[in-house]
Length: 224
View 1 (cartoon, rainbow, N blue to C red):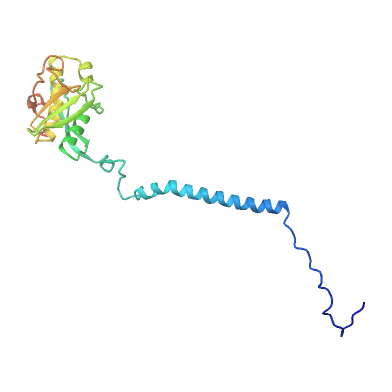
View 2 (view 1 turned 135 degrees about the vertical axis):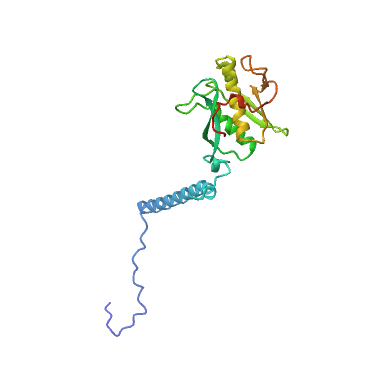
């Protein structure tokens, strides 16, 4: 049948429509793969932020001088004071006072410990220590009677060369280091491994606190 320009078109069947394309299996796989990668990236980002956030929140700002609660005292770890420590004089029979940098202690007890730790440490170049090598500081405490008790490790006895002079120089280097730099402390008693001892090597009585021993300081040394 031929229809001209003036004929009625209403009775004709609708024109056929092109078929709706069906995604191929490859396209469907690619779409799900993209979604999976996106979800994995999102989960990874959430994990990263949650694991790092506590550190970001507690980390001190650079240059502020603040320390974290996990490192108490770190801000003052390099602060120091000028203190007088004692080393063996050239004559070998007395102590010579020497000005040294010693770490700062926030309390008298802490400062006393810093002083003892510095005194028992190896001597600087050109000086001779009266303290036996290997001596360690176990504890330091101060009583209401203004007396300090210094608890040293057994190395101070085991490694000591002996002799009354050497023993006196060892004992009074420690006593003088505390009483000179902390004048509120009037006497010092030395303990070994947490116990009172009669002497280190049989000469200087350590059964009671000892006052500052000026007789063992080299004559003519400048007053500390």
